[in-house]
Amino acid sequence: MPDWSPDWSDVRFDHAAAESAAAACERAARVLADAARTNAAVVHAAVAGAQGPRVERVSRRFGRLQDQAHTAEAHLRRAATELRAASERARADQVARLDARRRWQAEADVERLLEAAAHAEPASVPHR
Image (cartoon, rainbow, N blue to C red):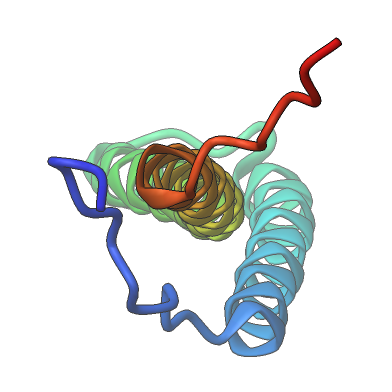
């Protein structure tokens, strides 16, 4: 037998659940981005031409909320990307494990053949 051993366990990863979660993150990011654009238009229209400390406070608070919305949107999109990358890594790891198992089996087969040949009686050669 080869002096090494492959990982005989399969990679356990729910690719469908990961894709579903990634798609949900992307949908949430789109909804958040759309809401941020809509809210920006509404706030800008509401404060257009207005002045004073209240308008400035509203503008600052809204600016912070917009920043938070953009940050959350970016986190959601990053989560979707990371979920898909994890799925791809799991697929690649499973392929690597299967390749290692095939390589181990091929080495074991060669060793068995060599061992069988070493123990076989030599074929008799007819004398002339």
